[in-house]
Image 1 (cartoon, rainbow, N blue to C red):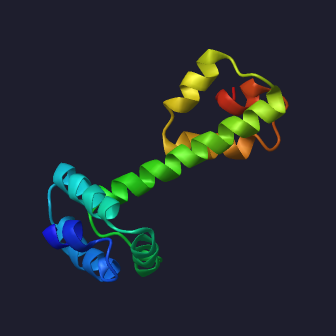
Image 2 (image 1 turned 60 degrees about the vertical axis):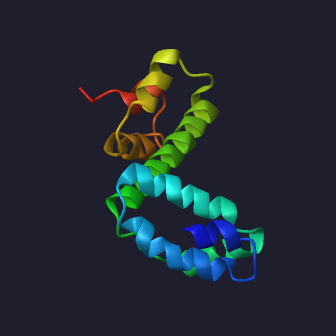
Length: 129
């Protein structure tokens, strides 16, 4: 960790960052987030890109990383659905936006399918009778 802070901007930055990652994964969630952020911020742009290449296709092992990847995907799905609904039905009522913002992934996926054929916002968000 100290090596990453001291030498992360050097030519060895990517190798140092890659060496720190396995150790960070073993830490508790809050501490892992803190140290991971410190390491990434200590690397120069080239080292950050190289580390991203190393990590590309990597399947995260820690519950910490899996949790935040899932949250990121869910936020992306939510943003896309909101954009689609606004394009199709115009400005949305505050209650509909609040409902979307609080929805779980399964509901977002269902609504994303419904928006393709729905004629009204209610057909997307309401349960069929």
